[in-house]
Image 1 (cartoon, rainbow, N blue to C red):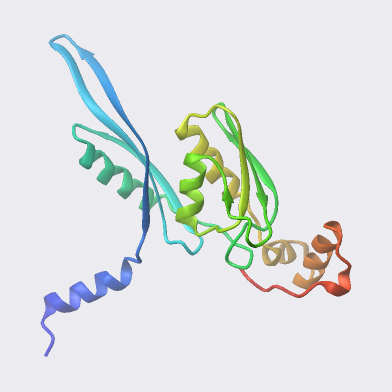
Image 2: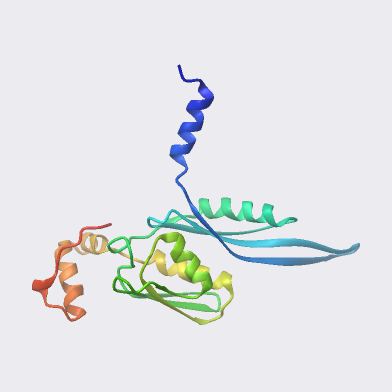
Length: 194
């Protein structure tokens, strides 16, 4: 007979998928009070499951480990699902801005790798993207770069979503995309991923 504690541990293991966690930035923050200065730490975390889900969080605390824990909890609550093409790259080119930072994301053929700067690389690693080309324009502040990258990924649409919205077949959308990239429609193989 299985005792209730073991049953609870097993259910928690099933609920919590394994997350990839990346610490993007830690800042020491100073607050000036009447009695002197108070120091605390701010942490920016990115987490993802490596299969199309990613989130970011930032928090402050008196100690670095506590700030990281709080930021991780916030990132888990703010996770988004991103449709990936063949499970390795994004579906289409896209750009977005957050604050003074702007990012441009481009899908890439297999074997390209992740060509992106520090904070954006952390997002793509946690997301599970293997091939992408990204460029940051403007502010290199990690908060803005992560925010802009997540904003761009949130706007990402798969051919299935576009086909459902426009009342067309998925194969029509993919054929149009491939002809726009220079291949003939007869060479197109039908992808049916989310």
